[in-house]
Image (cartoon, rainbow over all chains, first blue to last red; front, top):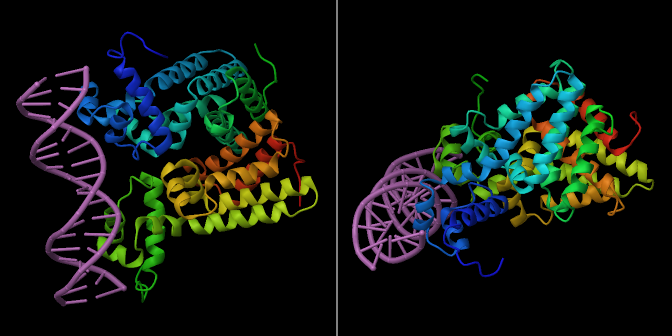
Length: 192
Length: 192
DNA sequence: GTCTATAGGAAGATAGAC
DNA sequence: GTCTATCTTCCTATAGAC
């Protein structure tokens, strides 16, 4: 917090944290490299030393959350029982959302980040949606379930990232979001 | 579709429809006046003839949906019984979402439009959220209900605007979204 | 009512000094 | 590793011709 011996090396880390904050406040496309540089107290060129392009910053900001979500989906899809797949996905999704609150809110609410990631990831946002919904509702024709799953996923992501719940601690928020998700997906309210 | 006698007067209407489509595809800040002009087959200056600024276009695009939502909230808040307030709000909200699908999706998923409207509306998005949630959950300390309401509102808006359900007709989608909303808010499944 | 032309500024990005 | 200086490109916006 205070005087560490070196602010030198973690400039990259500070940059990513600052970028995420600014992206959240102003959107990806509403955030210029100048704004990031100013907030960091350096110049635009200094930012370019760490990242060759703005897209690289966006990717680096989004990566931890995406990797985690990707893994959760993989794990879930490999389970044998349908109920287990859904429970694992729901739990993992909520965990990821809560752990990366700001990022998830940004990701689900900013067309800019989705566009940027679509250029580089083989799994852009849409593919995540498709994979997640594929696990949650296997019969595509089941409109009722499809709508419920859609509302659950979108709602959990947005609510989890909402400033309204910024003051709620992780465990409590996780519990509440899980409860809502289970209700919408018709799962029992208590799972390991 | 084909040769109407006059494309002359409704340039403004075509412009707004085109703008909404482009805003949805590329985000508000990702849409330039040049793009709007090109899509319309006119020049940038022609666009400036109808609207003095880009913000004016954003406002004009958003206005119908916002006005409708504003009215629904007002009507709901004037009802005497708590259950009636919630039911009216939920029904009206779902109706508005379905009627203005693309706009609502845009509005709930683009930081650009919220920022623009905050500059001119006395009731920016946040105020809508506050008013809506105030009706849906009167005890602010009721976290469980607050989370459920948040998920409901955000989820209904995003799901309603999702391209996934673009092929679903208004009545069916309305019915499904209402059902999900009532489940989350603990309301009986059938109301006039 | 629509156009050409262009001003003025800000954005992303690069080269090279320190 | 951070800076100054500069380039190019794109955007909003205006003035004025047709």
